[in-house]
Image (cartoon, rainbow, N blue to C red; front, side, top):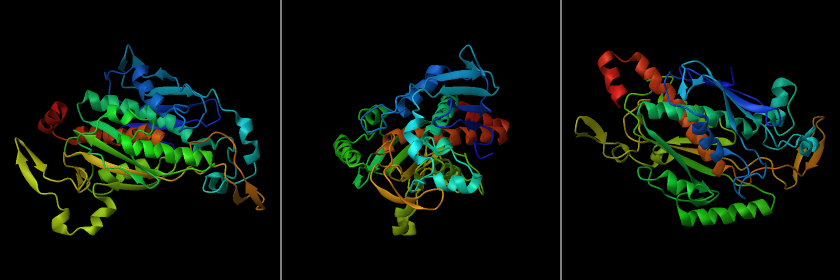
Length: 369
């Protein structure tokens, strides 16, 4: 079941980078949630290749086809099937990789596990698989919006050594989408563009960090032991291609503080309880506390680059590789909708699980949220 994610709200993705298409089956979506193909297309357009000079030049419309589970603009409560057909694969560009393992890619490990691999574009290891995740995440967004349970925004907060500080409580989608880097800090964005352009010209690549905030999430989501909310968020984000690190709240920087410096004091506000700081990142004891959930995902530099590298072929013979094909010099701008999608999937799943277990009075509170 390695292609299935979630418990009550589950997605199963299928398809390869250079196959007929990429698809997802969403199971567990409640009925009567407003949903159209346009709702899904908005997110797919943010993820698709060829949208700027910072991304792969592969041209895909990534047009979503809803195959099942929706009638007259509303979900039926039955499995929702979505297909996005591949149109610009150009598999012959990968012929030189048929018998060569790309450094830091999944070529060797797929061979070690299955004894066979799809060398055309990386198959399931390609970031093209995330088309399905973003489509599933778009549905999760609609469920969350239908239940009034939060807004999810992600942005590029670091590329290589260029960092920026953005307020998670005030950042807007308009500011994020205003630049091709999806960094809402205009000055930092211009420097990021110059750095990525330089790496692309040199046949190299860069990594960085995507920060994500979920605002308006109700308290009480998550489990106290094995399915802590932050644990499921970590599993979701670390399952993305090229993601190598996860932090929530203060993250590793919290280790430099003392307990009194790190703790988030509680106070009463109206009928609810708030915290004066948010170093916990909106989650305490594995359960959401109602504050903004702030997470960060670290992405490595794109593994497939034009610069010459030492590697071996499938016979174990040393070879020198100068990879061809179309690849992102930096995955960060297109990773933003992927991060948002995975966070939406986790929060939607946990919200539905919470609604299934609370009593009538508590359920009324959640439904009114």
